[in-house]
Length: 105
Image (cartoon, rainbow, N blue to C red):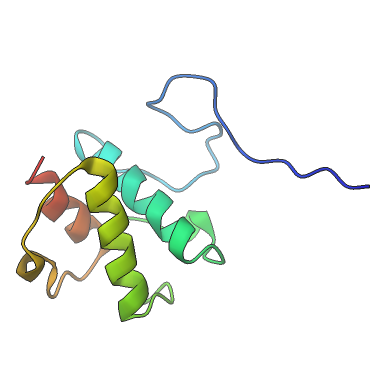
């Protein structure tokens, strides 16, 4: 019989359980970045978490257009944001997505 473990933190909500997780942008964008990161991992769980960085693009990580739309939808729901769809066109990196979402908080 094998045990299934999941990663949950019981410490402060401001930091990951271990320092081996993907780097986060400092400041107010950190919460938005974590929401984006969680959503990417939910939509495309085979992406290694450490590859989800502000400099990466979702397309380069293997997300197709439907995956990218799903990620944005999940983040908007989680953060209770309303952002015009046009603002998501042509965002080159996850960091650019985080910046766009952060402007609407």
